Image (cartoon, rainbow over all chains, first blue to last red; front, side):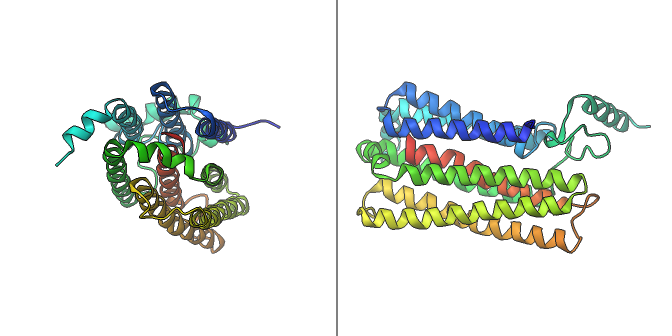
Length: 93
Length: 217
């Protein structure tokens, strides 16, 4: 039995999800943990966008917008965790 | 021959050497996604509108977390991680089957495509069942939408996502019916491609929601 690109993508996503669940159950909050989780979000998003949605070779605008979403939000998750005090200060009415 | 046509032919020629469509073989007759909009423009307007909506949720979450750090640190510990993880498995697996269904219709195998879409719908139904169980579990453990700001965000995001899974599942059932009557086939399946893209978007939204609510503290 040979695995094709879709099979490998599915297996990769499942393994990363299991790792995330393990982190949820065991790891204490830390900025490094946040960074790892953010990287895993970006990686999972990229795999789905390129391999399931098939945007790797599709229209450039759509591909770039979709990929950007999964660069921007993981980065925002990390930044809002790292600078939560400052964010609270600038969003206080 | 125009410059544009020549460029397109060159791209297709290059792609024949390196691009494998869904792992189903080399694309020589139907490089349908190369430099093109998968599905149709309308579905992409919908997809970007939905992603913008989820973006607003995420930004609201960031601000709420910054103002209520203790609630957002303790909140994920109170949730049922198993339910969140099983839901993630269900959505990833459904996306996998939707991609398989699209690959099958391209190689003129409508029966396999219907089978894969049926598995995908089953995964969508499983997601809804797990969510139903999770919400009951929450109530049994005293978790309500007004418990604190973390759980308000949790219900706000997950219920909204649940609604998206519900109607996206209905669209998969529609795709099955269209394959059965022969409206989607090897030559014509733009509608199925559009539905597949929408389904993957629903999966993508969960890829961010799951760690935000169940993992990160």
